[in-house]
Image (cartoon, rainbow, N blue to C red):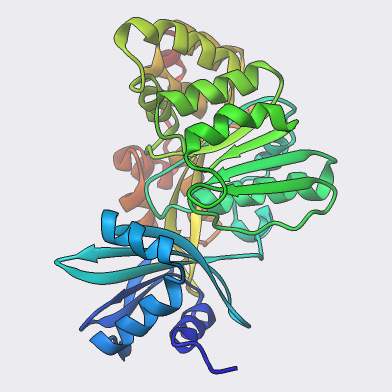
Length: 365
């Protein structure tokens, strides 16, 4: 069997632990490695791009869809290398390709370096667990570790709805079904409409995108399911605000009350370079829905959530600054990188000197 036109560049990326490939005519093939874009030595010419598209776009239906829309999402398996999620698109009138490696090796919590309380959160029977952060902050990797923890330790039926599928799971104690938007289901919404009829215990929604998806998450939580999802937001309190922004002003009070009941935890994370040995490690802010945080959400005192998190270490919570301080003290990150990533750099600077101000009064004020 002749070697695929893509095999060399895909092997190069996988061996370099790349997450994404950007293939553009007349440009070096660019890989995303540890969050950074790195140019390879290989430049894709027009003949190479033509062969790549012929390899990827294999049916007349896909060809017609691409001609009509300028975008095509599909999956591609390279023998001996792995599975890839692919987007073929036009830019400046020429075809470009973006590929993402769909991994089958899911890192556990210890390897990821996330707080151990995430194990307990993943073991929740019901409620909504949100992993938030900016693009490239490792949200999907942490979510995958939660799914795998359930898979290894509980007999559950897990259904994931993803765009794209980023990790492939193999059944262990649990039964796992993975549905990819565009391939297995038409839209997130259509998958969410039907998911409760598929007898799930755990539902993973790849990304919370709009009011409809959060309505479905609330319904699933209300009926006794555990819902795991991600959201683009920078910290735990902003995550609540972002969800409320999905709704009209007249709806927000009732949704805030529903959040107070149904949220199990919000874990916000930021990736930082390791001080030694290369790679990255997450700083994680953890909000757990206790009587205090529930009261603050019900009373619309969202601005007091950061102080509540900071003063609730005994409940398993931690702020970004507390996480960063711990990583610095363990020698895992540098003080300089910690201060760059801090929500409140001045407070962290004082913490690093051993000075801690009492923020309990902020919660009651």
